[in-house]
Length: 79
View 1 (cartoon, rainbow, N blue to C red):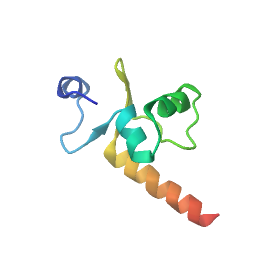
View 2: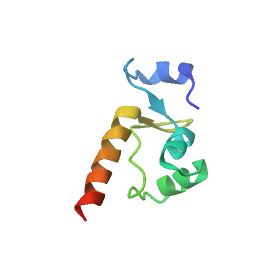
View 3: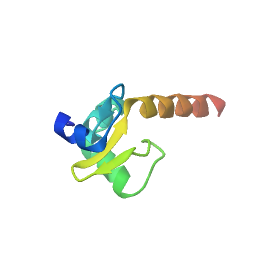
View 4: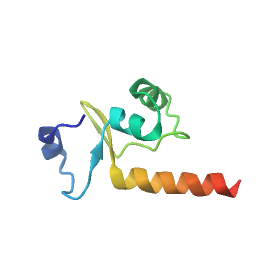
C-alpha cells in the first residue's frame, strides 16, 4: 500500500485518495501481478493509465479510476 511519507514527496492534493497496484487490482478484480503485467506491456484496455510513476511503482488517483470506470461502463453499454 502507499505510505504517507511517499505521498508527501509527490504533492498529492489532500482530497485525493491514492491507489497502488495492489489496491487497483483489488478494486478491478485482478491480482497485483496482473496489473503490473498490463503496465509492462502498456496494455491499457483493462486498467487505467497511472497518474504518477514513483520509484516504489505506479500510483493512481481514486478520482481518475472512478472516471475511467464510468467511461468503460459507457463504452460497454454502447456496444
